[in-house]
Image (cartoon, rainbow, N blue to C red; front, side, top):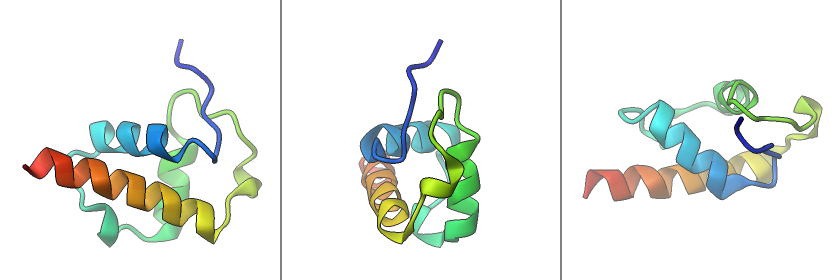
Length: 72
C-alpha cells in the first residue's frame, strides 16, 4: 500500500506525477488539472480543499524538475 501523501509532500508528488505522465510538460498543466491529478494519486490522503496556489506551484516545480531530469 502506498504511503499517505499530503499537499506538503511536493517532491514525492512530483515524482509520482512524472511516473504517471512522463510525456506531459508540467508547465503546460493548468492548476485545476494539477489539483485533480494530485488528488487522484494512490495514497493521497489530505483534504482536497487544503490546496492553494503556493502549494500547487511547489508541486508543479518539483514535477518540472523530475520532467527535466527525464529529458537528459
